Every structure is written in C-alpha cells, then in structure tokens.
Length: 281
Image (cartoon, rainbow, N blue to C red; front, side, top):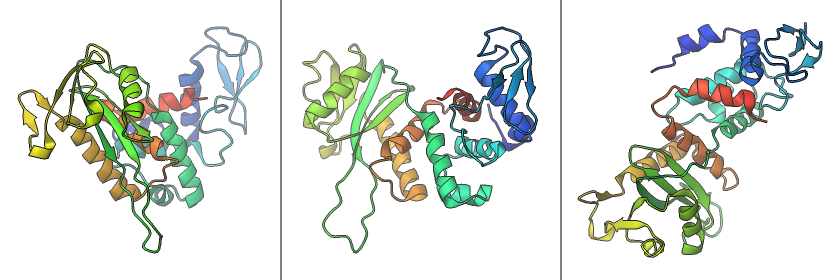
C-alpha cells in the first residue's frame, strides 16, 4: 500500500478539508457538548470552529491538539506530517523551513510537535526478541574542552515484529533489567551479545542465548542480533545524516520517531499520524 503526494493532495486540497478531517477524526458525528449522535456541524465563518445543529454550542476541533494556537495554515501542518510519513531518514527543521516558507523557529516547533504523535505505545514484546545497547551519534565542537558524555540507547526487537527503544542513563544492570522485565514477556526467548549486563537473564526466567562478537561470531544457528543491529544502523545514519547532532534533552523524541517508522513499516503512516493528531491532547 502506498500513500503518494497525489493521494494527499486529492484528500486535503485546502485548509477547509484539513479542518473537516480533524473534526471527523476527533468527534465523528457525535457532539462533544450534548452527546447527540448523528448531528450536523455547521462551519463558523472566519473561525476554525463549528456549531452543533442540536445544541447550538460552538465546537473547536483544534483545541487540545498540536495545531492549537498556531498561526501557520492547517494545510502546511498536514503537509509537514506527510513529509515525515514518507521520509525514511527524517525531516530536519531546515528542510521544513524551505518546503513551507516559514521561519526556522516555526519549523523547529512544528517538527517537535509532530514527533509527539510518534510516542511509543509500550506494548509487551513476545516470541524471539533481540536486545542490545548502543550510543547515539555525537559531534564535539572543535573548541570544546574535555569529552562529551556518550548517550546510551537500549533497544529490543521482535523478529519480524515490533521494536521499542529508549534513551537510558547507563548500560548497567540496575537500569536495563527493569526495562527488560517491563517490556519483554517472561516466556520470550532473548538473544544478545555477551555483555555482562545480560548474564542474569536465565535466572530471571528468560530463555537466553548469546553470540560472541568479540570472537567475530555473529550468527550461530538461530542465535544472532542482526535485526536490532539493522535498526541501530538506520537510526544512526538518519541522525548523523539528517540532524547531525541531537541534544540529550530531545533524544528520546527522535528515537520515538524511528521506532514508529519501523513498527509501521508495512503501512502508509500519514493517515495514522493525522488520526493521532486529531486526538492528541
């Protein structure tokens, strides 16, 4: 299934179509004020709102969404979301600035808000699960003193399934084990490298198999971590190539973006993001 720019343009030709889409995704045909099903919403001239045909109350579908209090056109917001949905390596604020003709400050805020739509759902991983930790790409200013602290990312991925990843304080047992126990089903089979942090997995009830990367062992039968390594490769290339450097404060939101893209890799993500945008409060 594909969702091309032609499809997007036909479905959302202008601000009015975008506003109607937010209204439909958020309320359907039910008035949030009176609760009557099957009402008609009449647009208010000159305002981004509607009037209920039953109770005559004003309805503002953009309130409580990422579009609230924004002077940028709603179509530009929708187009920015479309760009995120079709970009494999992410969309920088400078690219949004060029596409939309807005200021860099506006583009940066729009990108930040769109990433809120990609937060992870926290579903438990099952079956064969690969786990690994890595470090976020970082670029040190040539005149900076000392060494910048590396930011640790921990991830787990089902084979042929979903992935979850998070920015963590360290790669120690006290940090990673609670994450594993909260996000991976106890009956799952876990595959990892031979890092010491994973040595207690068998004692915690997991079936655990390792590969020894230090001895150049990357696959042994069904044991490997190639799936999570592939996800790390895409994440790092995208951050390094598109964003160049990411602040630790916002690193998790960028991780969420690439986790979302991976988990919805077989679906057109623009409709998913637009539906979430109408319901995010």
